[in-house]
Image 1 (cartoon, rainbow, N blue to C red):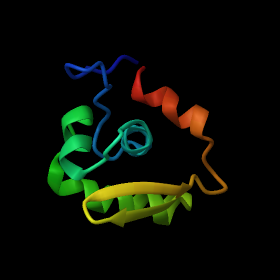
Image 2: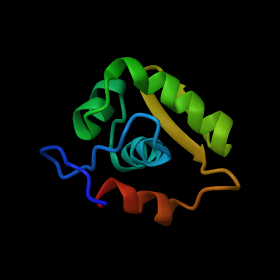
Image 3: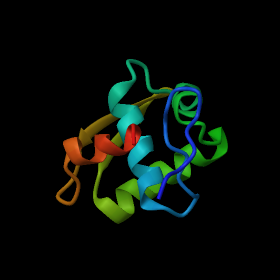
Image 4: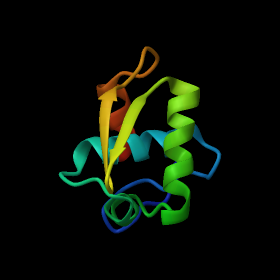
Length: 92
């Protein structure tokens, strides 16, 4: 199945699709300064959902993420996710 993409070629998966979280995590890894605004600009996610989706990544996949000031940092991808496999979903 094909999904629409935004102006950066990022697939726009449905709200409750796990791949949407993978896109978010990949954006945090990719961006030099992953703030809520930068993440939302790249992924087309609503700014209001970024913090809640980060929490879902922590709870559902064991990802260890920290927010220092306005910037997110990935400490660990956890035991479930592999970074190369997740990054695949940023560009479908």
